[in-house]
Image 1: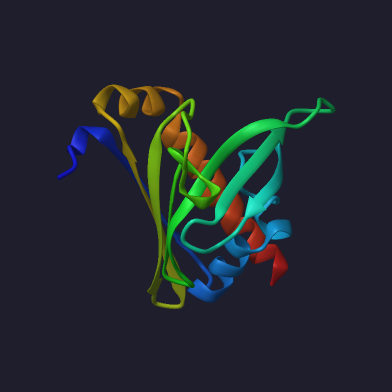
Image 2: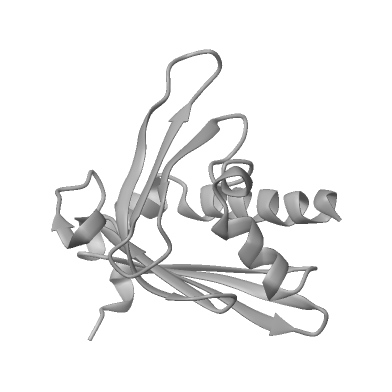
Length: 156
């Protein structure tokens, strides 16, 4: 049973069907366009959408070199409905020690003509959850969802 104090959540309506939201999530070139809040740039190193598959992104600000951002492992994938990843495992279920241990469940639920995009993020404990909140969880994850929506809308 999870402790609610160790959990953060965010949800937004995106004016596009789940299939379009999934397409923006499931291809490297699309994910790079919105995954990290602008103006920081994202480079996707791994996006192996299967249980045990690797998920790794790097980031850079301005003209600096790309640096590691996130390394994780996908735990569950249901195309156009849900994906779950963790930062405590790398590709192939290899244990790692991340700078922030979390497990994120992203859901894509059809709502009218669009999608209810929700992220539920579990942390090891309340202290880690508070740290993530203080780092700007709502603002940062909210910005990426807004960028995702804008990306989908510009693709038509």
